[in-house]
Image 1 (cartoon, rainbow, N blue to C red):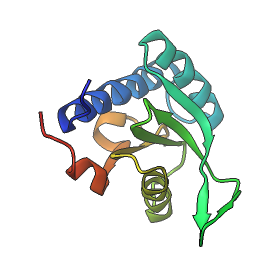
Image 2: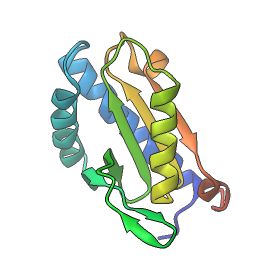
Image 3: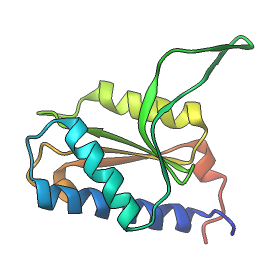
Amino acid sequence: MEITQKFINELTYKITGACIEVHKIAGAGLFENFYHECLKKEFEIISIKYKSELSIPFDYKGKMIDCKVKCDFLIEDLIVLEIKSVADINNVHRAQTMNYMNLLKVPKSILVNFNVNNIYHEGHETFVSKYFSNLNKT
């Protein structure tokens, strides 16, 4: 199967739907690790392949550095999902999510804050990398 922008966008929709489902059942205001565990179960239910708390390698001048950096989820080896449960998403969270996406060389990342009333309207942001632009649209 060819990976296209359309496929990535459809997968993004499914991931966001999974986050909304978890939020609908659990509500806002719980700790991040609670949502993380619920998302693992939800991804299994809807048959989305993921890696959880994936260590991100970093090549510094030709030497691999173990920086103990982990993204919350790498979905289908294509999309980084970073989850939060905070009062407000700020630029540090956005930078973290985009850096994970670029270090892993994947086309897209999603930042979700579970500490909101409505994830769809106020609790998620998506970012694309240069790898997304290089994909066919359909």
